[in-house]
Length: 137
Figure 1 (spheres, rainbow, N blue to C red):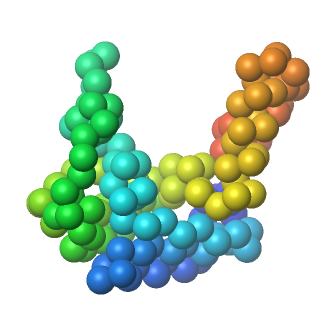
Figure 2 (cartoon, helix red, strand yellow; figure 1 turned 180 degrees about the vertical axis):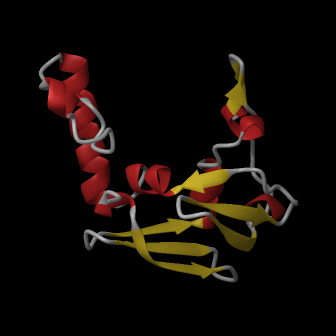
Figure 3 (tube, rainbow, N blue to C red; figure 1 turned 30 degrees about the vertical axis):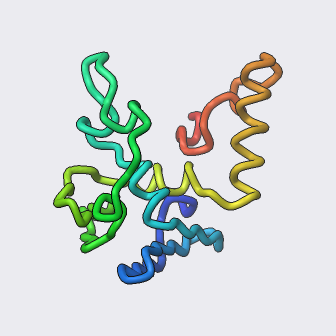
C-alpha cells in the first residue's frame, strides 16, 4: 500500500491562473504557483548531473514563457510532467517531491525543525530519516 502522504486523491491544474493543487490521501492539501513549480523542476538540465550544476543553480531571471504552464500530464502513478511556455518538458515532478516541498506554513515549519534536529544531532535514528523514507523495518 502506498503512503497516503504521497498519494494524491485530487489534482487540480489551472493553467491560465498558473496554479497546481494537490489533495493528498491523508487529508493535506498542497498548492503551488507556476513560478515555484518551475523552480522545483528536477530534470538534469535544471538541476545538473554528474557533479555539474544545473541551469536553475545559476539563479536565472525566469521569463514569462518559462513560468507559463501550458500542459500537465500524469506520469504513471508517481509524477506529473509539466510543459512550459518555452517548450521545456523534461522534468518529472514526483508526488514525493511535491509533498516533501509543500510550501504551506505547517510543512515549511516541519522541514525546518527536521533540518535543525539533524544539524544539532538531536534527531533519533527514526526521526533523522525523511518521513517518506519507508517504514524503517
